[in-house]
Length: 319
Image (cartoon, rainbow, N blue to C red):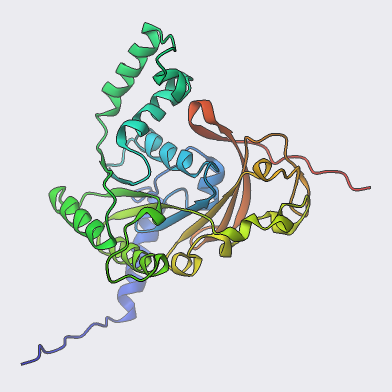
């Protein structure tokens, strides 16, 4: 005998009542977003990373997207000391050891190569600094999954994790979407991405969590016509995010990162912003469901494995 269906609807009063309560908690500071290290980022969103949302960050290899994700995680506990939360990282691109060494690099000012090469002369002070940092860092509740898995396997891990930690608020990161394994029934990477997008939406509705997922760009951005100085085509578009049809509808915030100098662009976009060096990063907030779409400039500090805000560059004077 088929199971009898039950009512799935509720009156709209419930939604308005919940909205009013949420607004009150936000105004009183009882409910807060996770602040990031960058006021420009926080201003473009709803004071940072809002709970029960998905932020997708897309960029080429070497554009700085992993730096941003790592810096958000690294500084989240420092910038949000009154909030109780955990971090669960799906790190499919690098092993946990590599990620830890990148953090040592950020606090010592030494490059990865300097810290790990046999010929490097690492002083006792540097080693002690790394030991002390690790001693303090492991106090923070960060867990890492480094074995690539399918969407269903990720869901199983999250279900177990949230049960084990009694539904505690959790920042969940994914580096990156294209390294999620395809299931046997999926015929293409796009099939996997559509399922991944639905997975994000389901989990963020069921659990007190937020997602930060990294994504690659497709080959549209490599069109030589778009690398011409002073063109609108310099800008990253929604359609440049790989699998944008799958990700766009599920993402609350969609950010595209560009590093113009890597394309040999000297004057960026129709306003012809002057790009001084290859450390200049441009963050395009392509979609901000609860914030503002905009473009902001940052400076990569690769030796310290972090990025910092910078002033908007001057524009080339037109003759």
